[in-house]
Length: 276
Length: 311
Image (cartoon, rainbow over the protein chains, first blue to last red):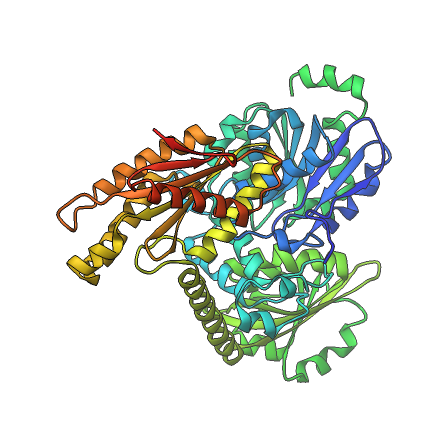
């Protein structure tokens, strides 16, 4: 034990801060391909949501984290603890929506948002919206989360114990994508059964949407939907395979981030008032 | 294109009694051994050159993108991943996958994939057992903290919640009031109307008390015919107003054909006071004792220097 709540890492230096929020599945290590390309000019803040990576699992509250608002609370807590304001927020996948929730709740904390492969809703609602998945697909995913114990050190103990035993939860291994089903399943349910489409028009900050050209989780049509409903947004299509542009196309992503998020304080004011 | 290093071993890979795939790191399938093709019913002409997504169910595509692909990029391997293969015939088949990245100018991934239908049945049994134990533990916890007759939290639960509120009062600089309540002449009710009627009175009063308190206020059965409430943020006036509502709640208990009355003792703890939970309860109890001695059906406030009747 002894881990801090959100396992915050601060890298680099610069007048402006980029806060990077990992998506469902892994942890802040996801950003390691991107951070070297920006940390010379920005302060970069990384963290793990409670229940992921090196966070302190004793803070895990199944009720709180059953909703994306719970994870948005983590984002706000990190900003508050570090006294951050006007940050550039980069959120991958579900974290794009978590960041949106946080930015609507506490607008002063954010300056601009970058959404990497966002999806406001993974479910299909024909004929108006196609998130890509049927309800049964997502139920199957929850069943998969139930039986996958990746990087989980104490295998059978917690599975049989079932109860909330903090000492057992604390034995999550250091593995990058550790999954304790009791935690990962809660995050999976919050991620894949949430519908944030109503929130898009409420966005208050300029937003850059980075869309992968081939993404099984968030199709191009989903990125276009986000762009169409998010005021003051820009859509960039990146020719790529997959859902992790920040890992597979980190240089290109870094350049797009740099262009969108001026690193010097004085240039920001002018840039933020200019049309996208 | 099949990696140069693997091509010479192709005949040997076809002899393996397990599924073997070779793909690029960008998901293109280069090779599938005979076991894989047979086990999962794929035609090589419809598989080779296609994307890995071809073999995964939609849920497994999510799992691949959320876990497996990031792990391959970051750690270069993944072990014992439970996935679901969507077979060549469109059926779903549970499987276990190991994968290893081999670096080079054009990195490639070797996958070992074995169907795990039987293993999955054991998993499902374990998951069911885990959920049953969890549900049972939750039920036991609720029972251990709830008074069965009134449905209110019991004394143990009260102490835990009141302690939390006491800390909160100190942290936020708020007063906190403790209200002890005792049903008047309860022994006479039992003696005159029987224990079943007495239980009915307790049960109805408990329900009324719960309706009187705010959701955030802790109210509990302290024992016998005694109840206790902890009001975070309430000063002596707020607690007095609460007590007046409790008197009304008691009068509406109609089981015995005449109004039930209660005696109430209050103490208010100011922020940063040295009083701990036990002391607060004792002071409220002393006020309750005075209310009884003074003729019952009234509220007494313990100011710690005097006992005052609350209007």
